Amino acid sequence: MSAFTTTAWLGLDDDSLTACVACGLCLSHCPTFRLTGDERMSPRGRIALMRAVQTGGVACDDEWYNSMETCIQCRGCEAACPAGVPFGELISGTRAAISEARPLPLHLRLGLWGLTRPRLLLLGSRFLAMLQRIRVLPRVPFLPRQLPLSGSRLPRRSEGDVVLFTGCVMDVWQPEVHDACETVIAATGSTVVRSGPGTGCCGALHEHAGLHDSAREMAEHVIASLPGEQEILVDSAGCGAALKAYGHLLGTAEAVAFSDRVLDIHEWLAEHDDSLPQVPVADRPGVIVQDPCHLRHVQGAHGAVRQVLGHCSEVVELNDDGLCCGAGGSYSLLQPEMAGAARDRKVALIREVSALSGANIVVSANPGCSMHLATAGVEVRHPVQVVAEMLTSADGVNGGATDGR
Image (tube, rainbow, N blue to C red; front, side):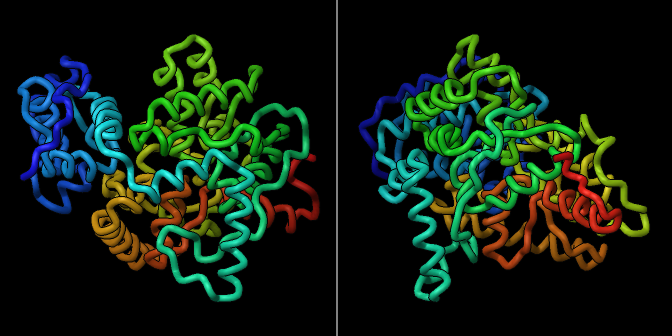
């Protein structure tokens, strides 16, 4: 093994490093350990390696880097840990140190750069969409099978009761999800304004890649672009987790106040569920729920998804404790074999549950998860899209508008 001449000090909190008692309760919740059976691919193994570098003077070699870089950062271990080890904080700090020691791959740096330029992202996506339609673009694993020719519509109001955070990639590649959210929010009698391209990217992927300075700059821009006291609703689990963590990321009172305004769209709808469509039990379609890691393990908002869907669907569980599908933001680009293996296991479970329950609809509240699963042939919708379809059906039956406009 070749050793790198990087500093042995990671700058991690010593108390957090020593909090792990190596009980092993995290192992079954770690997708990379489940795939490999290798302790270096487990949370407790990674913590032991972090500790060895920070306090033991051990050099960072190829195996050490591989252990850290193959972590999906799903944080399933954190939710399962009885000692409350802040693994997310530890791996985030470690990835930040790695980003200073080893440059990120060029294609990832270019991709992250593009996320900060909404107009370029939209134009590039339109170009790729046209290439798809004339069948000259080969199948690219992380791209939707058919990109939209246009991104999200501009906000139709200058003010609203709530703000819908539209982000970057989702605003361009899945604008129909924002449309569905606007429809359902309006059905509650509330008005909504979209954050739009001026607010831009939340910085979640930059933070995951260890680019903390860039993530902080983006967080400051998002906060400055969304003043006021309106609640900010997010329909992307990864973005929502990032926005809720701005207080920790920036450490300012302003950032804490901003994060306190952020809700996952399902959390907000659960508080307004008396206006959601009520479908007779016999007519409710079965819906298989795939929990994005940053909704279940980080935000703890997966229960709200079930509450919202429960008005119009028969919720079908995968019963795998929210084990990661392997998407992990940019993980599928950097670790395609591991990401593909995690996805294949999830897809096999989905098909097994579908065969037993008869449910054919799969829902996921994160664009990365839905696009990753789609590459294996799974048709995935956002939970709010299912609710919006039920509202549209009810509107057709009742012969009147239900969007509150």
